[in-house]
Length: 101
Image 1 (spheres, rainbow, N blue to C red):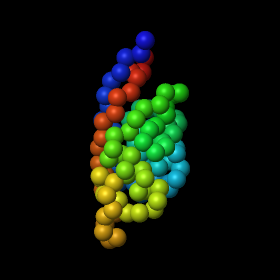
Image 2 (cartoon, one colour):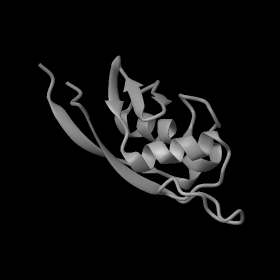
Image 3 (tube, rainbow, N blue to C red):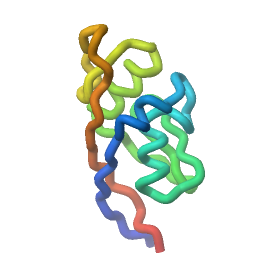
Image 4 (cartoon, rainbow, N blue to C red):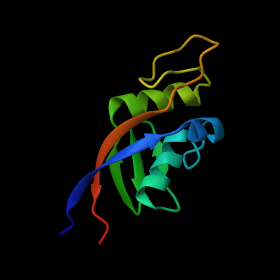
C-alpha cells in the first residue's frame, strides 16, 4: 500500500515563459510538477495530472490556470484573466501524491 504526502508545487516565471500552450507535458503546471516530483514525464489535462501511472486531481487555481493558458488568454495566479499588459504571475499550489519509495 502506498502512502501519500502533500507537496508544494511552485510555478515559476521560467515555467510560465517556457510553457507550451496545449502541451500536456510542457505547460507551466507540468514543468513545475516534473521538477517538484523529479519525474521525466507528467501529463496535465484539465483538472488532473498523471505521473508514474497514477492520476491525481489539481486544485481549482491550477486547473483554472491551465484552462486559461491553453486558451492563450493572459491569466493571473488564480486563473483569472489579467490585463493584457500583465503577464501571469508565479504561484504555488499543494497536491497529495503517492510517496516515492
